[in-house]
Length: 90
Image (tube, rainbow, N blue to C red; front, side, top):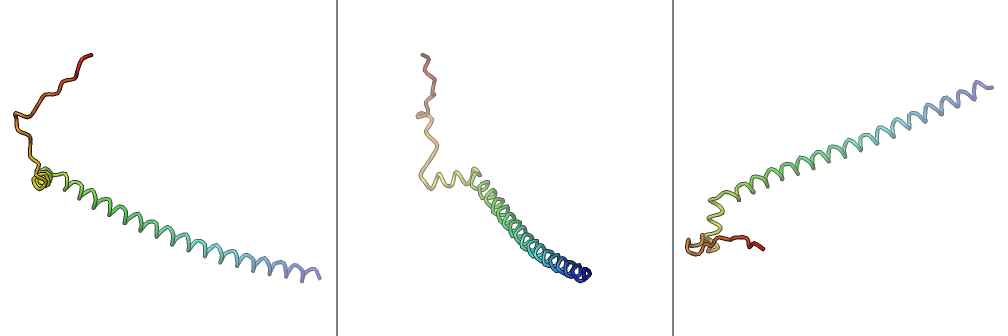
């Protein structure tokens, strides 16, 4: 009589273990998908950062700055208009 009781406990434990394994496996798959999505997002952000760095470097080139200043009607000041700034002593 006690052998049947133990058989039921063992079968229940085996079924419980199988369900736990399937549940954990499913959760791991979801986490792996989340990690892969974050890696892809990181790669996109890194690519955008590199693109922006190249654009910033191009915008800072002296030729580009001179062209923008010319379009805006800006020019270097005449030498006669340049004044030396001196700090006032108390």
